[in-house]
Length: 120
Image 1 (cartoon, rainbow, N blue to C red):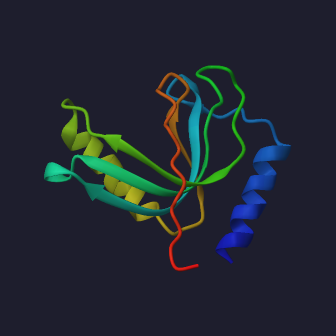
Image 2 (image 1 turned 90 degrees about the vertical axis):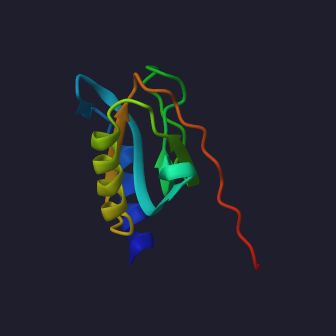
């Protein structure tokens, strides 16, 4: 069922132009989150695994094809309380097969890392 929802969402994203606006700018990352984990000293790194659609270049308006993998972000020193709340919201959304819009095109483009499969 999750796979069917993901496929339907991918088709919708490819057919309809993206015109979503977030806090004064275009959406930076679209994601279906499978899992969220907190890592590092004092859990200051978030690792988000799932399916992602990320920009080709900052402010270009073009997106890379959807790909499965993970992204990691380091918590900045400022606004820790607010950021932890947002990270907890992402963890709550994990496994729902719902497309989420994260960040805006003014943010850095994350480096996608492909998940390593073992036991095949």
